[in-house]
Length: 241
Image (cartoon, rainbow, N blue to C red; front, side, top):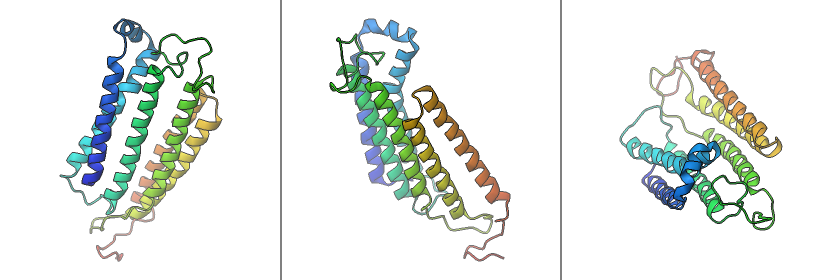
């Protein structure tokens, strides 16, 4: 249900991620692969840097292409614009992170920290300034992800609900607003976890717990609106009877 312009942008991001992945995998030395396959950190780095970015963007692209041929009356009226913005920002974040991670491997910004990089030169630092750029980069990307979730929630609250049918039993606009607040508050908590909690274990656990609470709250919102007090039947013209 995305616009043609948004679909073309996601396609461009997918091709970019695919090129970065091919370049990254092609530059791994053949003798390094046995070590990578035996090393969980190395295997995780390969998947994180060069497998999941084009895979996720490919899923986005397919859903955008095939979504144009399906219509559902539960889709918000302004979903095309909202979805284009959300998926576009997500694509930029994914490709940007992938590019930074790949550059970190082959430009040797932090040879000590990255499991795929060659052995470091003595005293290697990130741009000569910071001793542990993996810590800085991952923490920053986690924080940016939290800010993105909060922004997405704020825009979700502004979605225009589809016209109501005779069988509709709850206000979809209220659902968008409540879910939007869940995403806003969850995104703020995720960003605070990324920047304030000890990295990586405590920060990651805090973010995962926040995601679990967000899912539970969204289920409660759905149950409240489906079976709660707002169960008046509504005519298509918006008048309850």
